[in-house]
Length: 299
Ligand code: HEC
Ligand code: HEC
Ligand code: HEC
Ligand code: HEC
Ligand code: HEC
Ligand code: HEC
Ligand code: HEC
Ligand code: HEC
Ligand code: HEC
Ligand code: HEC
Image (cartoon, rainbow, N blue to C red; front, top):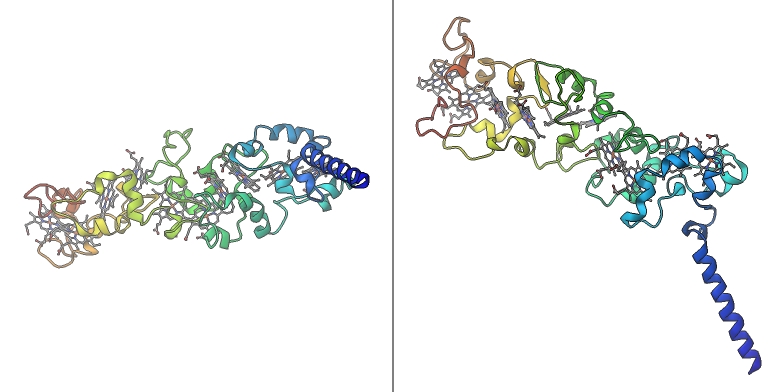
């Protein structure tokens, strides 16, 4: 009887101590090798101080147990003991897939990164940390000052488009033309998309309608290529023709309108049909007309 009572007390006592130890230790300490973020301040003081304003320092508020240093750098027990970098993970120095995995642990559920796997950037072996810089990145933790700057550092042809005669206003708001009304991610999701070319909409046209809503409305007299694909006539980024047209009228129109009375091939440069705005001199309602007598898109 007495023995059993002692045993019971001992058991309760040890259970209680175990509980207290678990409560007192940081969440990671239960797992082997983790030492907790406080330890890092001893040697990485400045970096750790700067990190306190990083969105990851507030990850707890989003329901993550811990996004401390070791959530990205792995268990630092060996590193702390030896000061040797062999024991620590630096996501910018490891294989692209493993590097991205350190981020996807937490970032695979959100809408943003849902289509990452199989996306063009993933297949080009571009890890998250090529575009994102955790320590000292900009507000979206981007590796360059602005998003556009980041994207055109690789996509130089798009950079050239942005400086053409007509273009979407994507240049920096500090540019002489004071643009910066939109960025690449107004149309693309760099992390992947359902649609082609990283366009995060059901179709190219649906993307255009998001801002050019008036082009979506049904018309009394439709011009059929318009509802099919805006890009038949327009470039998406910029063009050396007016209104981002892929080519000038009359050539633009003659790609499709070859038979007929006045729209055919070899018109002289002084012809009424090619002068000035060419076909658009008369066919002004090129996206369709709502005028009862707008059958030929003249009004
Ligand atoms: C006893 C001192 C010490 C402590 C404590 C310490 N480090 Fe380090 N750490 C170093 C030294 C020294 C280096 C190598 C020089 C450098 O890059 O600053 C380093 C480098 C690193 C690197 C870069 C590795 C690379 O290959 O580029 C990371 C990441 C890192 N530490 C993370 C941590 C984390 C996370 C903690 C806390 C869990 C931590 N360190 C605690 C001394 C320490
Ligand atoms: C969300 C992931 C993440 C967290 C959390 C994180 N780091 Fe890093 N750390 C990185 C990445 C990625 C790099 C590679 C360079 C970069 O992106 O800034 C890096 C680089 C480093 C380096 C190498 C030095 C350098 O500037 O290249 C050190 C040291 C370091 N981190 C320490 C820490 C410490 C200490 C903490 C906690 C206070 C911490 N990290 C929290 C992702 C993280
Ligand atoms: C432990 C979980 C965790 C890990 C690991 C992690 N993150 Fe995060 N991250 C968060 C949380 C939580 C937020 C804030 C809420 C959100 O935006 O989803 C966040 C926010 C971000 C943001 C948005 C910044 C902003 O200002 O809107 C970026 C970019 C980001 N993380 C990139 C990364 C990258 C790159 C890695 C890998 C090097 C990484 N994260 C690793 C949890 C994590
Ligand atoms: C090709 C460049 C690029 C790559 C690679 C990249 N990102 Fe991003 N990421 C961006 C840009 C640009 C933004 C800002 C987009 C915006 O403002 O809508 C962003 C925003 C984010 C955000 C905050 C907004 C959101 O969508 O939730 C998170 C989180 C994020 N990235 C995580 C990741 C993770 C995780 C990876 C790797 C699996 C990754 N990123 C790879 C360019 C990139
Ligand atoms: C580190 C270089 C790099 C950066 C930074 C980068 N990309 Fe890419 N991107 C590539 C490569 C490589 C390809 C595949 C080859 C190609 O089509 O040029 C690609 C392909 C694309 C494609 C074509 C998709 C397809 O299906 O053909 C789009 C759209 C794109 N990137 C948009 C962006 C945007 C937006 C950003 C900025 C948020 C960005 N990229 C940043 C390297 C980069
Ligand atoms: C107004 C919407 C819009 C904006 C803003 C935009 N794009 Fe695009 N982008 C598109 C569309 C639509 C396509 C598909 C065009 C095509 O296939 O001809 C495309 C195609 C691309 C391609 C693939 C090109 C090819 O020839 O296959 C790349 C790379 C690209 N965009 C990068 C960027 C970059 C970088 C930015 C920012 C500087 C940007 N885009 C801004 C709509 C946009
Ligand atoms: C995020 C909003 C947005 C999206 C999406 C968008 N545009 Fe635009 N578009 C604009 C803005 C802003 C302007 C400039 C208007 C201005 O300067 O008055 C513009 C201007 C234009 C112009 C006239 C250019 C000129 O030189 O006057 C054309 C053509 C055009 N867009 C076509 C498209 C096409 C095609 C798509 C789909 C691939 C598209 N837009 C998607 C915002 C958008
Ligand atoms: C058949 C060729 C063609 C197609 C297809 C086309 N456009 Fe146009 N678009 C033009 C022409 C030509 C102009 C110049 C009109 C002018 O200068 O009077 C123009 C001008 C514009 C402009 C600037 C002037 C305005 O009307 O606001 C925008 C914006 C525009 N188009 C958007 C679109 C969108 C969005 C689509 C797809 C829904 C589209 N276009 C499809 C030929 C086309
Ligand atoms: C991608 C092919 C394509 C392009 C480019 C194109 N159109 Fe059309 N257009 C059509 C089709 C298809 C119809 C429907 C006509 C039909 O049913 O025969 C049409 C109808 C018309 C009509 C109405 C007359 C009718 O027969 O219904 C006019 C006017 C017209 N287009 C003018 C133009 C002008 C001007 C341009 C250049 C700015 C142009 N189109 C560019 C394909 C095109
Ligand atoms: C001077 C005004 C004017 C110019 C410029 C003009 N059109 Fe027309 N277009 C008309 C009128 C008016 C009609 C309807 C009467 C007719 O059939 O002749 C018409 C009819 C059409 C039709 C309907 C089918 C048909 O043959 O009746 C098409 C397609 C067309 N034009 C395309 C074009 C193209 C392409 C150009 C540029 C090369 C062009 N138009 C330039 C005035 C013009």
